[in-house]
Length: 121
Image (cartoon, rainbow, N blue to C red; front, top):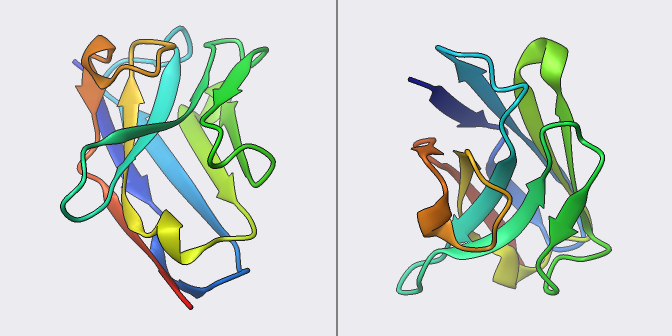
């Protein structure tokens, strides 16, 4: 079993930056592909970014490409999401997910509890 815990969310002004962290425990996630999703109020959960277990390949939603960067430190069992040039439309609960390299949330086996990101205009 894998437990994922997100942190780093908060309130930021438009144009600002935040770095989210996803710490894994229970089993090593160094061999797991990982992803980030987000869900805004009244909307479905949507894909944000994914990274291969080796860190050698990443994939982004068009809406965040060029602004967000996903990375991982397998020695620390942690995945990161660096978010720059934040926009009010980035406001959502952000979830870390493990077990796939897919834009489809159903492909992932493990989920964190989420961390709130609020971007004010």
